Amino acid sequence: MDYQFTSVFYLQSLPSLFALVLILILWKRRHVEGVVYLILFEFCTAIWSIADGFEHASTAINLKIFWSQFAILGASAIPPLFLLFTLAYFRSEKFPGRRIIAILFLLPLITLGLSTTNQYHHLVWEKIELVDLNGSIYYYGKWFWIYVFYELSVSILAVLILLIDTIKFYKIYKNQIIYLILATILPFTATTLYIFKLTPINADLTPISLIFVGIFIAIGIYRQGMLDILPIARKQIINNMGDGIIVVDMANRIVDVNPAIALISETNQKQLIGQSFDLIRSKIIPSDFNCTQERSTSETVIKIENEPRYFEVTCSPVNLLSKKLIGKIFILHDITKRKIALDSAVESNNLLRSEIKEKEKLILDLDAYARSVAHDLKNPISGLLGLRDLIREDVKDNKKDEALELIEIVHEQGLKMYKIVDELLLLSRIRKEDIKPVPLEMSCIIKEALKRLNGCTSQNHFSIKLPETWPSVLGHSQWIEEVWFNLISNALKYGGNPPEIRIGHNKINGSYIRFWIQDNGEGLPSESLNRLFNDFERLDNKNNEGHGLGLSIIKRIVEKLGGEVLVTSENSPGKGCVFSFSLKENQEKQED
Image (cartoon, rainbow, N blue to C red; front, side, top):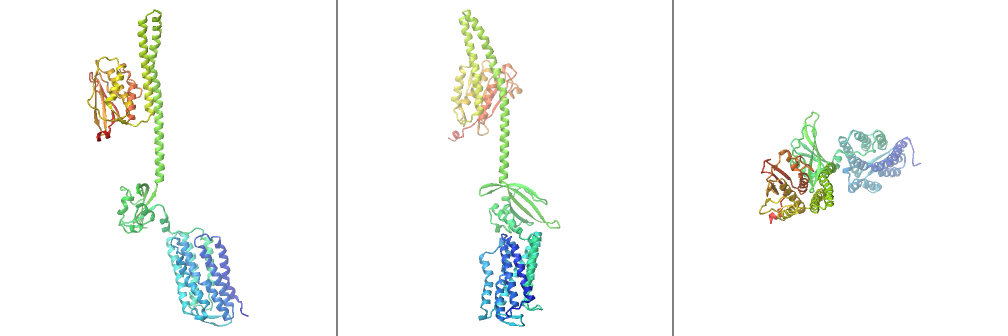
């Protein structure tokens, strides 16, 4: 009989059953990084375990050699597979490429090839002796020791990586790593004892120890949530953050930066390490920002690729347990989208406030408009109604000349009402129209305004002194003609007897020209001056009736063109009032 199945066979084959059960558990988590290697690890464990059991049960030397060769198929792949799982699961950012994976499996493949051809070179086993019916002693060849050194080196490397990672990970992941370390040390120890023949029995206990590997991994899955969440090293988190992070020590040297800060500062990440923080501080940190013993926050604007970006800068001190300050951490969080959204909201709110104010002002204007129309049209209409009766009487009495005189008065009252309506329409157009200021010929505009005055004024004797030259300014000719017409009309109406008017100009504020007109009337007190340009405002003094509407038009026109209207008076007979308005100078004309 070629096989004798004893209790040792079943004991050595038992790990294969545990391995298959664990494969079923791991299959549900096969999409987690590195779990595929762990599944292959358990599959190779099953191969090794069942082959080792049949090797022990076989009674013929050729069968023992066959099953030993079959066991190498699984055993040789276990160390590199566990190392690959460790790197993929705990250090995914340093996971090796295909070339490194091929190198890791090069020696196992060579070992597998040499074991199948061992009878020709005896590099794996020099000879195998049967001790009893099931027992055997293997005398190892030179290549076997090379492979053992490789296998132990890979196992030690995996354990070292796990030990190092216990420092980097949070507590929940540390517990997982401890279970994996325990699972690794047991088969590693059993293999060492068997190879160097340090066990009291002539049997390889490594497959049996792999039972505990499955137990520890199962405990890690069900008690510690292993494979539910991929553990990520803090370094990887920092490197993948969109926020810029820079660590500075007490000597003001840059200790560490992440790729984001290199993009923000437009410098090379590796070149920043060890450099003085002053090298980039002025570019990324506000000049007045001071990081003290407590966490502090500020905002700054950084140009990245010539585009302004807004950042919230947070500085946190780094302290030892003794509360001694050893450094500072600066975090730059991009708030450009939030800033733009807030600015847009503020702009919208300001626009809304302006619209509300404009509508409130419009309501006030409409109220004043109604009062002004009622005031300005009431007297002419009352006069027309009274004249109708007088004309009727004159017609009945055949008083032709008297009737014609009354008709002329009706005509004058009609012109007056027409002028009032025309001014109100002009005031409305000024509010709505948007015009582009153009160069003005002020001398021509003054002439047109004076022509209009010839048919409108009742003054027969008056004098106007004009400047010899006029500066070039920007404005709208029809509107400015209306300004001069109203100012000269007021000067004639409220000037002395006879009226004497002086008109001039002077340069102010570098790029503006102020035009002024002075009459020789009695002037106005200061409290009246403040009310002159209020929309539709009329002074109580009957002598000043008529200022309200015309001056409102002047104010609206000049302000619409970007200028300013002023009035001054010494309130002294003969010195009158000085009305003035400013317009932007035509710079192109000056350059010519």
